[in-house]
Length: 204
Image 1: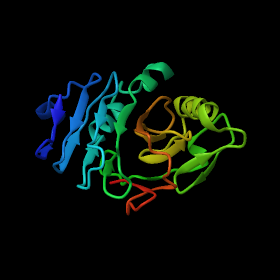
Image 2 (image 1 turned 60 degrees about the vertical axis):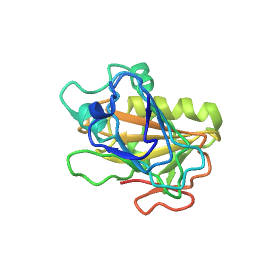
Image 3 (image 1 turned 120 degrees about the horizontal axis):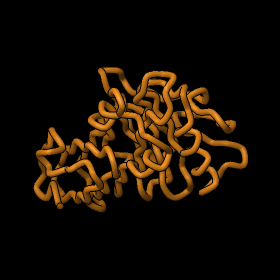
Image 4 (image 1 turned 135 degrees about the horizontal axis):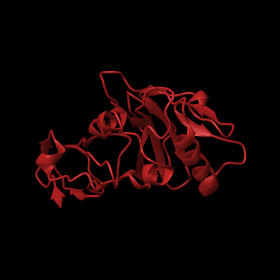
């Protein structure tokens, strides 16, 4: 499916034809807003290469679902399968909307994760000896096993190719309650934040 060739607002995923099961969505040159609702297999969203308008990808429907009764992923594989992939996301213009229940999204801390020793700076995590694919495997495993990830905390890992953002959706004490967004090809960001900027992933 191709959306946004002349721009548009899709306030509910169903209006855009999003089935919540791995849709392939491509945007054109117009300014667009898309609410995604992947609960089983993550959508593959491609923004127009070189676009200069502000596109907003809203994942709050996913957050509400995961935070609901029985919404947690059944296992780590299911959580990984539901990663929303966004290609051509621009840190200087585009917006990623996350969170649920009116709680403002905010950068998390190392205590959100367990298993490996992580350092968090401006929302991005690093770990001694944990780089590239090895670090990504550790990050995804620690996100899946965490029972301390706070609601609407955000943590991101950059494997040198893509950036993976985990957003806390659950009530504390439950595992596999975070959904993950992959910004494909984006590896230059140095921060998550609500102000955005050249090297900051703009979160709303």
